[in-house]
Figure 1: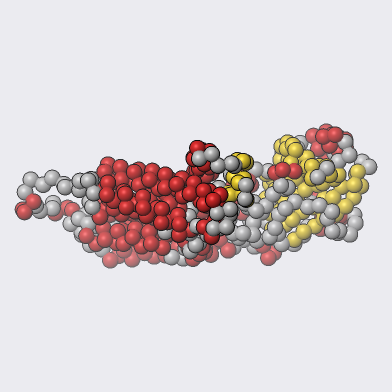
Figure 2 (figure 1 turned 135 degrees about the vertical axis):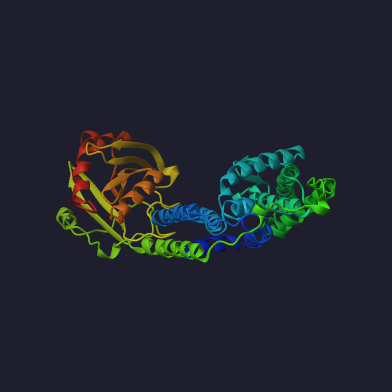
Length: 473
């Protein structure tokens, strides 16, 4: 599919991680796709191509395009099963979509949307494992996710949450329910039981690893390499599940006269006209091929630094004494000047083009480490622009930073607000973004003198942002 290569590449990276959370992807996705094909080939339904499928494909393409513009790869990945559903609806109709809905939803088990459960499972695993070792009177000091033993430190990291075992448990239980032809409620029971067993098994795994670390004085190879050990414990619990699940009864649909059953004529597959298929195929191909092309029409190459930047600099560009922890930008401009008796540095980190891993708003980018931030305050300037003041304390060195995201002609300080504003500005033909900041050392308590020098409600910031606009009037 034209929309998919970059998106599938990101999924490939997650599916090929050794002992990764989603390393079941290459096994599970073919199962789901095989079920989709099987149900399309063997289902008894009327084939009735639907224009609604084209509308669904168009909506999926728009969401994929939005994900491409704002560098939200997860949104692009979430679209793929829905896009496949739109293709089925277009070519076969609503009845076929209903017949394939379950395996289509099953595809989401291989998409990394389940990471939200890592922290809760990690907290639960830490609580249970530390309780277990306390009952064995093992001397240990618990500091969050770190367990300090006499011979070293054991960390209950994100990989110890057991999310990978939980997802595989759900997959195996669904496969088991399908193979045994269990009813929907019975399949749900099987999923819940195996999911619970996988969580308990992970508690046992982490508790054993702490015991091994303690009694081996951190010398056992399992302390650092315990991937296979975890799956061995999972297999033990899975065998227990199979013994229990054997008691579940297969679902047998009632039929008054099974030897003489005849499906109503309207349920058989009926071929649609060739013209209908041709028209729908042409429209679908235009959407799928045109969307990536649209994503590339951003016009970054035509952008040049506005003349007002040079005029407002006043001095030669300098090497900054301090700057935010942002990476991947294409241009950087930093100037130093005196204002109200203070030495200030004004900086901009400009992103002409953004892709996954090279983006303004991303997981790796931050103004400063959280431990250095003493206070934040979000302000709305007289112009309506939004900025944030941040007071930093790095080993006794205090600093005031005023910053904002520049998104075309707009500003934002929240990540979600920036993403949405970036999409809107892209539509208006203003794709270039930047981080704008002004920073100075603080010599007064709470940086009050420095804030006061910037004027009431930081009014001087509006003038500076006018001068350093990415798209001046």
